[in-house]
Length: 365
Image (cartoon, rainbow, N blue to C red; front, side, top):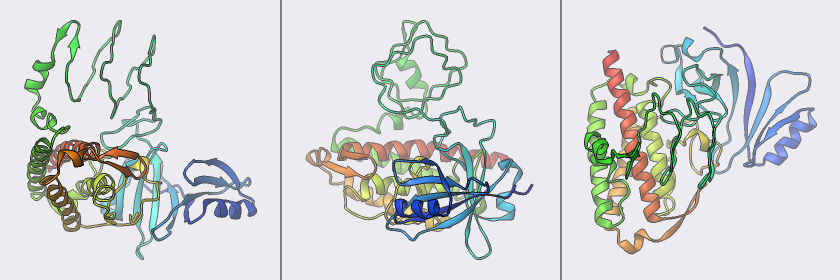
């Protein structure tokens, strides 16, 4: 299976307006623009499009974008130097980044596979397109067809569902009180949930709870990393069912810690190998190297460094400090407690995803 040729060209710029004017002067017309300094331009005579993305604080990057009919038909690991495996993106494709013999990045983009589908709002790791977000508190859904819908990272506290059909419904959530057809099933579910002991710790409200939560998460990740050590390095760079590889999961957690802790709380800087979620990839994260391709040892070292930094902080954090307000890039003002909750939640869920995928790799042999 080969590509279907050039689809577009990706350009980073210090000034979107200036670069957009440049391409407009060359006869290109705007297809769409975002509200964060990026947009697509295409020539009326046809040919590949140009995608311009404003970027600051990192070296500017440009790379070609090639079209692929079927992502599953390309053996990336066996053929290419893979910077990032095929990953669902928020604009409705799966994208992989590979390197040519001189180290230049090439983007390969393919349609979302049927098992993901454009109507699916999220995969286990990243949201796909279309995505519906925002504040829907108090909304009423009457006569709505939500067959096959995905709800991810949502707050359904106080929700009331009646005159509804639940057939083949899968719920994986933190349950405080759940009543189904008049029967309180909260204790029944939590007593049988193997992840409940850890899940129940990740929103602590006092310093002792913060320390207990991080200790439990550290232990869970220590076990997962031990499990990973039994795999060859190639496995730890391999995507399972289109999800992040183990290495990329570690890189994302490094990024999450930096976004919600290192930068806003300790006034540190981003680790260059950190990997943003696809919905935030266009944000101008200072110091992030989009072309980074760390090996297993480098990813583990960065991850363990961040785990240790959080441990050092929570060991002495006070109740007063938990209430302090800090500014989080892209997400605005939050309390230190809310920042730690986000890190704990990210650590909890991605540990589960990593454990699941390592077990699948082991089963596949």
